[in-house]
Image (cartoon, rainbow, N blue to C red; front, side, top):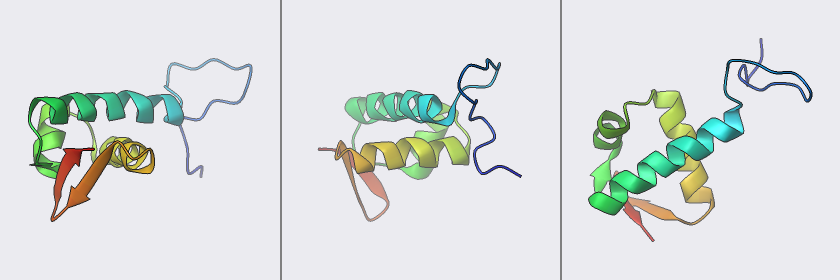
Length: 79
């Protein structure tokens, strides 16, 4: 069992998107949603982006790690 089932070894192609690429894509969707309306919670962002919980965590983690958003009391805002 792999922790990263979408990770493709170098030199091999796959219909699945690599985890890092998907995280960046979802991060962009989340950032765009917050750019329209800040102070949204996880549930609202998930509804807007139509992403899975797993992908939402990837995208939010990416943005938090990069210092692009902040989270307080369950609400997310751009920095």
